[in-house]
Structure formats: C-alpha cells, structure tokens
Image (cartoon, rainbow, N blue to C red; front, side, top):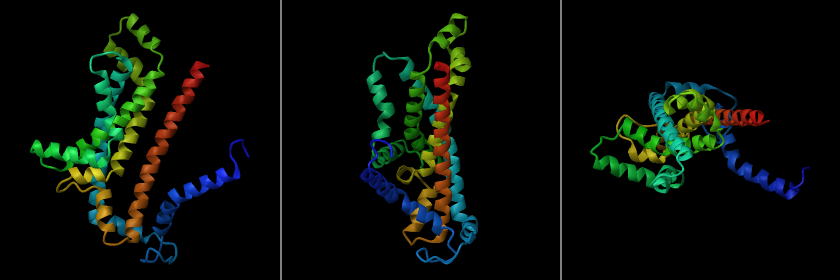
Length: 267
C-alpha cells in the first residue's frame, strides 16, 4: 500500500464513493428489471428501453434537449473562447477585474439565482419563453466553463509561435486562426463537450426559463418522478447518465492527451 493511504483512509474513500455512486448503479441495474415494481427484481429484460422509445413525450423532450445542447454549446464555445483569449492575452485594460468577475460569476452563482435573474430579464424584454430562452440561459453559464478551459490552455501556450508568425507578416487575426486555434483545438473540443454535457444535465435553470414546447428531458423526468418512479424512468435516466459520462470521459481524455503532447514538446 502506498504511503499516505492507511486502512482508515481507504475505508473512508470506499464509503464516500459508495454513498455517491451506489444509488446510481442501483438505478442503472433496475432499468433492466423485468418487473414493473422498481424495488423487486423480476429478472433481466430490455423491455423498458422499448417502452421508453415508444413514449412520445419522453422522445420529444429528448429531441428538444439535444437541440438546445447543440445550440448552447456552440454559442458558449464562441463566447467562452473570446473571453478566454481576452483574459489570457490582455492582462491589463480598464475594467479587467470587473470583466473577469462577470465571466466567472456563473461558476459560483447558485443555479436558482441564475435562473431567476434570467427569468426577470426575459420578462422585462417581453421575450416569449421557449426554446431560445433556454438555449440563451444555458449559453450563459456554459460560456464560463469554456472560458476557464481556454484561458488555462493559453496560459501554457508558447507565445513565441504567435510572435514569429506576426514577424513573418501574418496579421493578428490570421495568426490566431492559423497558429493559435489549431494548437488549442483539443481545449476547444473539451470545452464544447463540457458545455453540451452541462446543458443535457440542467434542470433548475431550464425550469425558470422554459416555455410551451421547450420541455427538456430532465424536466420531463422530474415531472414524472413526482407521480412515482417507474422502470421506464430508470431506463431514460440510464441513457442520460451514459451520455453525460461519455461526454465527461471524452473531454478528460482529450485534455490528458493535450497535456501529454505538451510535456513531449517541452522535453
């Protein structure tokens, strides 16, 4: 056993991870339950996944969720990249502290406050709530995560490459697209995947900013769970967990590969 990992530490970690992930594993297991009773195991079956696919309301909510995720993640990628470049490349300009605080505020702001603030904004603008209000709301908090990833990548980026390109006659804009953008591409992909995952997983902000025809999958699951948990809900929750897990793992692997490539270049 490695130094620092005592039996008590291992036991505490095991209990902590079990407390966090055992309920999720039980949910996934019971999504394959033959019985309609979610607490009684009746044998292995995939029938509830078929029922899930035949549930029109769930499928419509899933399609809305995917479309909102694609739109908000793409917008967050553009805005977050611009914010990250600004914070990494322009270290001194009037209002930088305020700008930095505004960019990173959604990271620490309670979701209830964010959702309520956006709701009041949309009401004051007389903007009918629906697909686009949810997409804008998700873009608001997802941009902060993209900005953090892009800024951290640019802080380790060798600026000499940009200076050499501009010395050879490239404009700052061309240098960004030809030199900087390809190098930070893994960070951009990670940021997009993270933004998409956050959009898929959001319930609170969407509940404040949604309207007719824009019910997301987490909202649909929540509304049905209040009437009782069914194996069908377990199935759709398992699919959602799978998508979120896949997005997080992919983003992590891309970041690790980028870090390893950076270490090789330094060596």
